[in-house]
Image 1: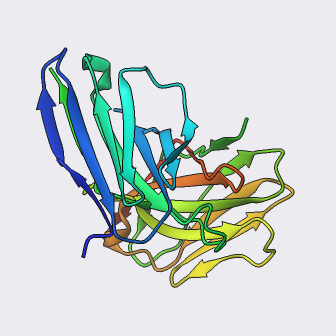
Image 2: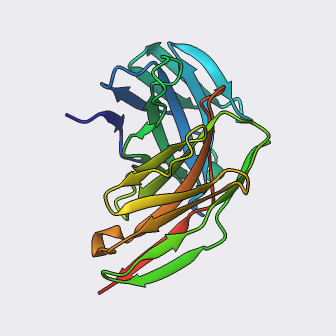
Length: 116
Length: 114
């Protein structure tokens, strides 16, 4: 069974469109994250949710809106896509906040978004 | 603000030999975690090893070990008996336990040659 899954794995779309990426984890973790990896492979956090509440909201354009319907899911919706949004987006989850002291993050396979 | 620096953009090693990847970080926090992640061409992010800052003993996972120097804020990764499957990009990451946020270094591309 896949621990952290993302759909779709590849997404090609035109500028101005709206798209969503879905993420699900079956690890029983309370905290989920979205990261962006740019063309130079640099990874940067975008958002994190703990138990469906927004914990981290980095300097990300308002066009990006995360939604956590429950602890096992964290979706990312992007409005009015721009060329600069092309990147690989990773979802991750961890036990942070659960008091276990085991805080490593487990990543999904990534979604390669290409905006043309 | 915390920062993580990997000063070696690319490295190569012969199969079966040992290689060390460098990482330094900057923080004023006392309670944090450090990680090494591996990203092969498949782009999957794979956890290699972790180190809690409060532990003096260096972490070890099979052929992977770290040299954690807290005072120097250094966290290097040693890969022993390198294998072709170790070819990947390696990321050092810092996590403040108060926020749970991972801050990554720029990455080091490691090529293991047969």
